[in-house]
Each structure stands twice: as C-alpha cells, then as structure tokens.
Length: 280
Image (cartoon, rainbow, N blue to C red; front, side):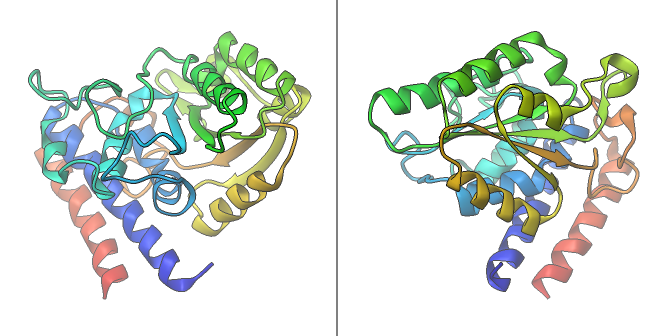
C-alpha cells in the first residue's frame, strides 16, 4: 500500500472514532462499541474503494453502501462527515429530536445514506436487491454492506445469502464485523453463528478472512473481491469492539452505552494523541 494513502486512511479511521465519541457523548445514548470496531473498514470504503462524489451524493453510477447493522450509525455519520457529505459539526446533534442524524440511518434525510436500516437482518436483502438492479440495468456500480456477527443470527440474512449466490451477484461485497460481542454477551453465549466463513462458503459465496482493523489486509480483501466473477464475496473481518478507546475495547457493556463527561475526555485524549502522532 502506498505510504501516503495508508497514513490518510489511518487518519480517517481516527477521525471516524472521534466522531463516534463526539456523537454518542452529546446524544447521551447510542452504540459506540460496534461503531468503533468498523472505523478502518469505513475509512477504506469511503476513501479508497467506492466510486462516490460527496458533492453529488445521488449520482446515478455511484457505488452503494448499506449499513445493515444500522445501530452503528455514529460510525457511518462520522465517515460521511469526514468525506464532506455534511458538516462534521452536525455530529454533535446525533439523536436530537430536531436533527437529521437519528439513531439509525435514514436515506430520506442524510446525504450519502443509500438505505434506511435498523431492523437487523434486513440490510443485506436491500443490498442484494441493489446489486441485482445494477445487473438488470446494465450498470457498473458495486454494492457494499456491513453486517454484525450478532446480526447474522437473523434468518433473513441467510435467505439473502442464498439469493445473492443464486443470482451470481459478483458486484455484491459484504463485510461481517466479527467483534464477537453483542448486546447480551458473546455471540457464542447468545446464539452462536460460528463457523461464519464455512456458512457463507456453503451458501456459494467467495469468502475472505481478515483482521478488520488492519488497513493493508482490508485493501487486499477488497482488491481480491473485485476480481471474483460469478459469486458474491463475504469478508469476515475479525475486529475489536470498542477499538481505539482503551476502556471500551472488548467490553460488552459499551455496545449501547454513551460515555459520560469524564469518559469522553479520556477517550478524546487517547484519540487526539494517535491523531497527533500520525500528523507529526
């Protein structure tokens, strides 16, 4: 990977994490843990992978993105703001009654959001439909979706997986954020979806396993996915829930809890230090 691009992507990831903390702190609610875990993935998608134009978010040939784990909206909003879809200052209005940045993404109000999500399991179905529409219309746009590992306990996910493989949707690439924690505990304790790679392979998908917090592995995975013909790709991304904030990492309690003032200061101090080092 080009050193300049890598540095930019790492900076993007830090800024996304700062946006997550800023938003959830000001909202006094939200889901920081599973938002922090996907920062590198969103940084790469919105900086290096997808065909997008922040100044023209509805352009017809854009690549589409569906955040199937819609509760990770703070990360998506931070990624969009970082790329200029809307002012970063608006992140502070997260979940306010008069804000367009609600707790789950709304395609009718947020520039850059391609699908309204929140009901777990449904996003991948929408993504598969978009990919099929691209094929039918003779278009070239690709479709990306991020799912949670707890989310794939939903049966609809596997109906969509079966459909996508049957229709040979090689323009569809999903990422499973495998941070191993959901709201009630570890995914094994709640309703184990393991083994995840073998399940997607059995449904006819091309499967790639990576460290989802490693920029270079993310680049290699998306580059490989573009070359696959005749089947969709599932990237199983091992991540750390709460990544980047020391006291949140691998702590299930931060699935849906917002930091208080003291915790906010600690988190931002840690992230500011990483940003300063990258910019130094």
